[in-house]
Image (tube, rainbow over all chains, first blue to last red):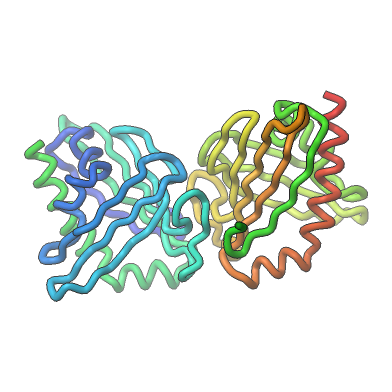
Length: 154
Length: 154
């Protein structure tokens, strides 16, 4: 049963868990799949520890930058990655706008492939609705396809 | 320099770090100091792991119960404990009311005693003000004295 205010995207990907985890945690790889083409990801700074910050900047084709700042909550190599925009690093509350979401990314073995699941939780029904209307399903879906294509080459 | 929307309480306590950490993490001990007397703490359920929930119920002299539910973000034995009410456990966003605070409790050696510091951060200036007006300084101060008295007996 999904939690309250939760959005879920899942894919069965023909690549090992380790390759998918690397795509999420190595800046050089993350930049190659994180933004839905034709958007790009010029900046990815990932302080991969509990309480560490991640700063990921996406860029639109006309050059507009969209920065995302978050903090890692839980890191289980090749299995699970949890982060939120409620903090900007070292438990500093995000004060530019309220906390919006928490993402739980899991990688599990399934039929010789990897079950990839992105669970995104929100604090309010409005925020979930906003995220859906921003294009959560097509957006995260396209990125999951890009992620899968990259991971298969590793 | 304090972070934005931050309240800090600090004490030099004549007890070892380990004793103070135990008072914060063992339910039987926490119940003895956590609420400012004559309030009591009838319930303390502490799932002491990153992402684990804590449920602490305080009770007023006339029997009114005040439940506090949170999640541990970081645990460094005898040094540091971080928790927030933004989650109710396993990264479930608190949906009954918005996230209010994040507490960073630290224990450091100082002159043969322990420097005890409780740093409490809020997402908004209003929440910080509310917490101050609820009596943060006298309340957490009285509890710190109760904590110190208990820790000295361990």
